Length: 111
Image 1: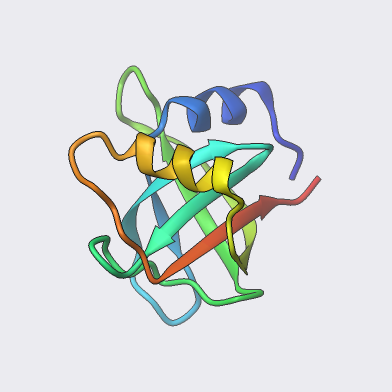
Image 2: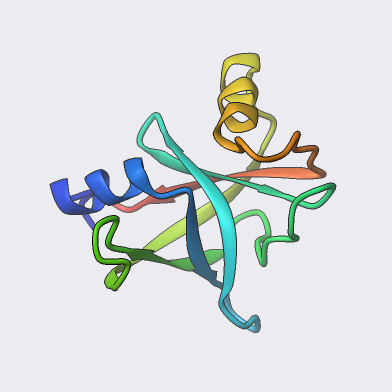
């Protein structure tokens, strides 16, 4: 799936998205759009995301203006260690808490 302007704009404004992965119920997770990928932190002080390395998932994004369903987009999750700049961006994105996490996933959308 190509990253459309609509999906890109919605992900830039989204603080949370729904993630559905095989064998798991959809789960609302905090996410941060950066460098053409969706970054999700999991565990620690954050909810555990239903992700594993290499998992094919569906990301559901709501409209930033109406909060209604906007799009479901397939993505692949990659367990990663964020660089310092990305880690700081992930911490800054969580304005109401000081996040600590057990894992960071980079969700990449097919082009």
